[in-house]
Image 1 (cartoon, rainbow, N blue to C red):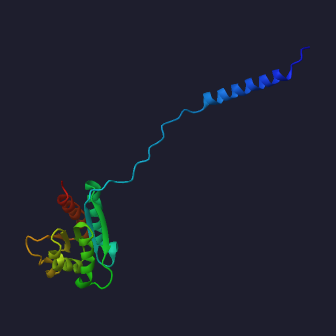
Image 2 (image 1 turned 60 degrees about the vertical axis):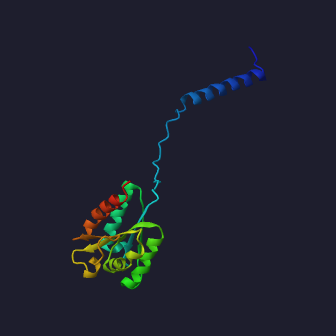
Image 3 (image 1 turned 30 degrees about the vertical axis):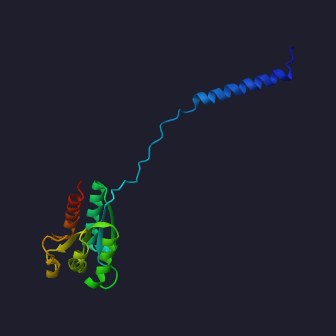
Length: 179
């Protein structure tokens, strides 16, 4: 009978470990191409369009549709969009500072929803000649809202129901930002 020495046993263990490692490496799944995660960041143009809403903000149906229109246009044109609600009393005098805030903070286009915001824009638009104001007015809007001087930096968008605001705002913003 033949005796094996310690060196022979360790040699057998090393060979066995090498075979196991080789088998694991051979059976290891190949590196599959990792799924790419879509990039959610969008490169925006240096143009901003803003929405002034009544105090109720996007709870106002016309404002919500106008905001959706701004977002639609932003997706197609890469214009930055944001909104601001005119908090407090529902008067043109109260809405004026909110309107001015948007006009001086870099908004090239300001969409205005709500009768008092529209009245404030009609009164104050001349103070911001480089800003284009889109005034959303229902078909039964106040007569004061339509008294914007011809050729000024205001344009009235008459909508018969709030859902029309989305398409009109998107279309106007896309026209204003072509280029």
